[in-house]
Structure formats: C-alpha cells, structure tokens
Length: 69
Image (cartoon, rainbow, N blue to C red; front, side, top):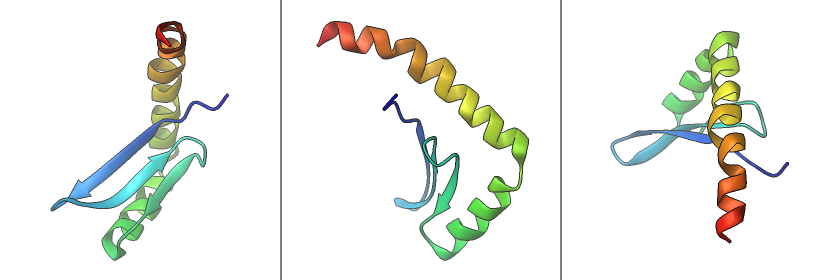
C-alpha cells in the first residue's frame, strides 16, 4: 500500500532526523541528526516499534479516511 508513517525529530525549529516507514530507517538532515539516525538505526527494537506503530495507527485508520472522501 501507499500508506507511509513518518516521525520527525526537531530541535530549535529545524528538522534533524526523520523515520520513514517506506525506508524502514531514520534519515538524518543535520550533522547531529545523522549521528542520531545512525544510533537509532542500530537499535532493532526501536525500528520494530516504529514499524508496529505504522500498522497500529495508519493501517487501522486508512478505511476511515477513504470512506470520508
């Protein structure tokens, strides 16, 4: 499906890192964000939890969103 779960991390109004469910990993956008993304990507339990959130939040509610359109 084309459903995507994104979790962004901001510091001082600047996006430093983002988890993208299509990629299945964090991507860093600043020097600090790249370091944090590497750290988070090396934790398989964190990545599994974020993928589970995609299933729990996005896939459960996709039917509701498409009904209202």
